[in-house]
Length: 520
View 1: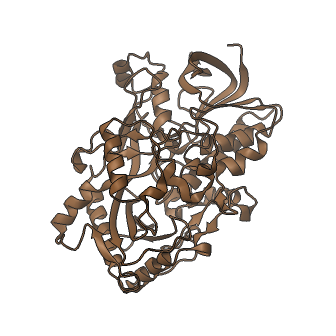
View 2 (view 1 turned 30 degrees about the horizontal axis):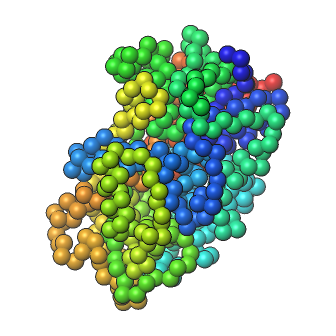
């Protein structure tokens, strides 16, 4: 291997770019980032209103799940950023720290040192108010009047208002967003762009990692595909796998790290027998609806992702397990449904989505998420072809309690749409599932047929101290040398809400671990 770096980071997403910033701050450290997607940052990416145009594009991995038994064998669309900045370049810009109970649960599950008390300073340090690079804008500053009507409807049902969920409050209120001067300002803008000219930092885009290179149990480099050729690069200090909760376990398996029987099926020699690789996958099921139709078009102001209700399904829960999200100008309707169906039937592939054509200004949409799912699925490589998508099994509703909760969230959504601030204030009537659907049995079937993904993924390389943990509490791959995993795959369990800020927090902590472990 003629090319040598101190650190090779596989994946230029949220975690990878945080690490690129922090590790290259040492001007003696040579840092390489390998990103499978393009180095693109166009107006489509910058404009918070155009997020739907990135869906199903060349900047989206656009996975299809394996058929889901509880959703009538549907193959669910799973978005993930395949572009420099990763999913932080295509996401809905939500900045959410989750609740203390989420991280205390990590500690109780064996991740000592990752409790709320341990991680809270890192959350505070990543936002501008704490001296960090990320904004946390109150979406209500330029909110849509329809969004305010949603908040009023929830209050009418007895739910309290919160001022900022990042202080631990639950109830109904405005999202916090990574928006600055009206534009997307996530990890690429906040962490990477200010330092990309550092002479010791190199980024190779359109570079797909095909396997990790080992000498014994030590990871010494990465093989990757670029411009139709196979390349190898040496890592003199560490390889850091930051490819996300779907690609990271796949690459480990292609490199001989995983369950021995799974590796044997692939025909890959075992380097490390780690049965937890690709297991314990968590992703939140998302009920697409209910929706409402108004007797007049809604205002064309604000962003599409503004207000939210977080609440507990039962008294005594330490954190919310239900999220109800209101989209006042949702890119939803018959045209988009037709496009998605055609896309699934043809097996995926990039298409050109033109968001304005899908927006009906009379339609509002609720998205209901089971944010603390009980079900656990898996992600596994199916071929030694590094460009082949893995088998992704979200295991939606495998645990019946998840479906019960999804139905309850849908019922709550119908109640919200029926309240006076929306029904009378905007002449709104329920469009889907529609007033003709009555009874819990019918709603249960409707939920099963209208479940998608919230596009948050975790836990396939989870940290811990038990036998199925993949990384230790400093995110080093167990049994290996020179190899760490730093992304959402290491989360012991899914936080109650949105995962982007938690991923950034993990990367900030990892940068400190790496600096401490390799102090010059």
